[in-house]
Amino acid sequence: MAATDGNGTVLGIETSCDETSAAVVSGMTILSNRVYTQTEHGQFGGVVPEIASRNHVLKGTPVVRSALEEAGVELEDLSGIAVTQGPGLVGCLLVGLSLAKGLSWATGLPLIGVHHIEGHLFSAFIDQDGFEPPALALIASGGHTDLILVDAFGQYRYVARTRDDAAGEAFDKVAKLLDLLAPDEPTMGGPRLSALAEEGDSEAFQYPRGLAGEMEFSFSGLKTSVFYHLRKLSEREKEARKADVAASFQRAVVDTLVEKTIDAARSVGVDRIVLAGGVAANKELRSHMAEKAKINGMDFRVPEFKLCTDNAAMVAAAGAYRLAAGERSGLDLNADPRLTLPGVSEFPH
Ligand code: KG4
Ligand code: ZN
Image (tube, rainbow, N blue to C red; front, side, top):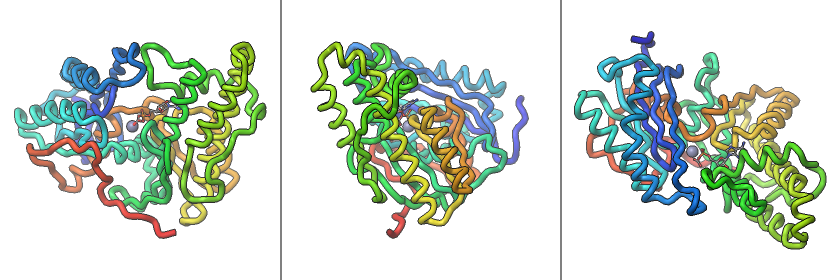
């Protein structure tokens, strides 16, 4: 059996969208993190909830098995099972919950339901040599763009949210406008757009920075601006300027995210910043945030790439914390597609 610490060894299960993931962590240390990304949605241009749920049914058990195997642990070595309870696609969440509940019932291990965003928050503290809250977290994913003040684990205050699109959603929509979406990955436009942006000039076009100076995000104006810009170009021009459009768009998103995060950290009085969620995998965002944090004397942490997008290690880490705090979920735990973050309040502006 692998070495474990006093926080306990926890199996995490994440099935909120189109990634079937299982992981084993010991406190904030990852022992395994298996992620199966479904490729069956390609022809439909987006995640089909029914197909996603069926795939979770097919892949759930093998993914859990391989996570346990890679960690070198048996079910009886675990001290708990953590599972994403919400938000997410309800059918998908139910598959993960059924799997976790079945394992909990069969083994007698305690069960804990985890909020998906709390998982992303924890991802920024995994394997970071004891780096701890208070910190300001920017969670930027396909469904969220939130600035959350982490006063302590389990105690959160919303500082800013998006008024419309999430940052990842804007990346996905603009990737679609630029015909970049891969047939087997119709929702992961971000990585393709940022790869193309590396070949372009980020100063080529000045796209709008939404709600400058305000503690709120907005990305729909930016997306619309790219849409109308592309409409004015001929097919040939579009092909020739694609990389410049991608680079200029990315610059506008990154500028907005970095500026608001640094301003917010100053205004709430913290000097630690963390970045998490799928968009945290963006290299430009990582490097610009690191640069601006350094200039402002702030400590900045970002998870390794694999921990940015949806994965079960983050769910297991959040679950390990809650289990260690004595929390337990019953076998009547239900999926909640609109679950609110536990321990959260609004930051007074
Ligand atoms: O956290 P995540 O895996 O799923 C959600 O909970 O939404 O985030 C997925 C989002 C997608 O919108 C994807 O395009 C974006 O994160 N993303 C990126 C990059 N990698 C993933 N966006 C920009 N640059 C990237 N390198
Ligand atoms: Zn996510």
